[in-house]
Each structure stands twice: as C-alpha cells, then as structure tokens.
Image 1 (cartoon, rainbow, N blue to C red):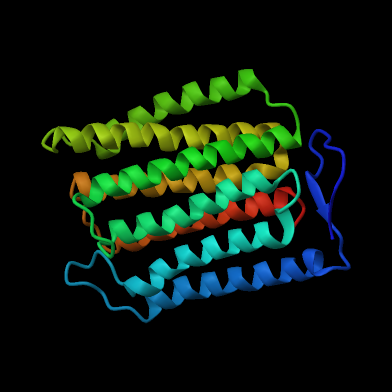
Image 2 (tube, rainbow, N blue to C red):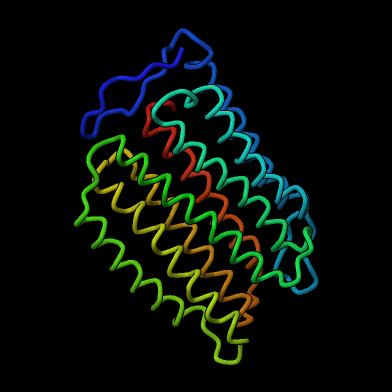
Amino acid sequence: MACTRPFMHNQPIMMISDDSILGFGVVRLLQALTAIFALSNIAAIVFGKTSADRTSRAIPWLQRSTSAQLAVISWLFWIFSARGTPLSLAVVLLATGMSISFIADLIMAGMIQVPNRLIGGIVAFGLVHALYITAYLGVWRLAGDIDRPMLLGSLLAWAILGFMLWGACVRNPNAPRTLSVGAALYTVLVASMVAVATAVAFSQHRFRLLAAGALLFLISDLLLGNHIFRKRNWPYVSEVVWLTYITGQCCILWAVLRGCEIG
C-alpha cells in the first residue's frame, strides 16, 4: 500500500512499495499508457493529410485524443498512488488542469462551440495555469520550505519577460482590443506558471523536468499567438504548436511522478 515518510530537503516526497500494484504495477501501467500517448501523436501525423495551406497535417480527433490520454494518466496516478497521501491535493489540481486542457483543446479546435473561440480558449487555459501554479506550490511545500525570495524574484522576472515576448511575438495593433488585452494577460499568466516551475526546479533539482515542460508550454502558446494574431502561416505550424504543447504537458505530468519517485 502507499506509504509516506518524513519530508526532507531534496528528498522524495513519498514512496510506493515495490511489492504492490501501487508500486511496480502502476509504474508499468503509466509507462504503457504514455507509450500509447506518444504513438498516437506520431500516428496522427503519419496517417494524416496535409491541408491545402500546408499549415497542418494531423488527424484532428486522434491528435486531440492524446490530451485526454494525459488527463486519464494523471487521474490514474491519483487513484492508485497519491490518494490518501499528502500529495493528493496537488495531484488532483494537476489532473483537473489536464482535464480542462482537453476541453480547452476542443474549444480551440472548434469541436466545442462557444461564442468566441479565442476568448473561450484563453479563459479555459488561464484556469489551467492557475491550477498548475497552485499544484506546483503544493508539491514544493511538501518537498521542503518554499524559498519566498526566489519565488518572488522568479515571478517578477518572468512576468516582465512574458510581457516582452507578447509584444515581440503576438501583439497586433489591428487586433480587437479585448482579444489583445486578453492575450497579453494570458501570456503573463503562462510566464508566471513558468516562473513557479523554474523556482521549484532550482530549489528541488529533481523537478527540472517540470521547468522544461512549463517552458515548452509557453513556447507553444507564443507560436500559436504568432500564428493567430500575426497570421504567420509557415508550413506545419499547427503541428509544431501542438507537439511543443503536448510534450510540455507530458513533461509536467511526469515531473511530478518522477519527482515523487513514482517513475
């Protein structure tokens, strides 16, 4: 059964016994599902058809299904490993964020109809980042004392950088003001998520994959914003946006699993 041990700086948050399905078995299950996730992303592109404008190729439903697969993996991690442990709330927040991400992906793809697709996507993904930030802080608190000066310094630096990146990559003076302001605030929020992940990684080195995943998420959003607001339709831009995003999501998920010595 799952068990916990005293928290020490840069030491595992929790351990899972190797002789139960909550240990070795669940690791193999999550690894197998992650392999299916990777193969699904590859198959979506390989068996897809290049669009007329050459901006995309993947099979839409298969590609979007991989976002749902990550949500399933995160909830299975909670059910089999984290539930009933001090890590439970953080994993629930992470799994909820992964689930809302799937809904946001469907909104952005037009598979779920809302009055304004971009505003709907910004709001949904904004909630995701708020959940991730809260989950990161929860994991950091369990792993050791939160270094507040490091956290505040990282937040300030990344917020400024995020605003600058929005101006350099996304801002379009001709875009509707509501969308432009929403995109700017959203970019700063994503940068803040990266800031917290970076601070956690610097404080607890085993969470370096978390910072990498968060950064990939930011890069994906900047590429998407550049594509939407500045109409940069270079070949297969949609696939680059998706692969950086979904790889970032996978890194975020496995950073928590690995950081807790589950993988």
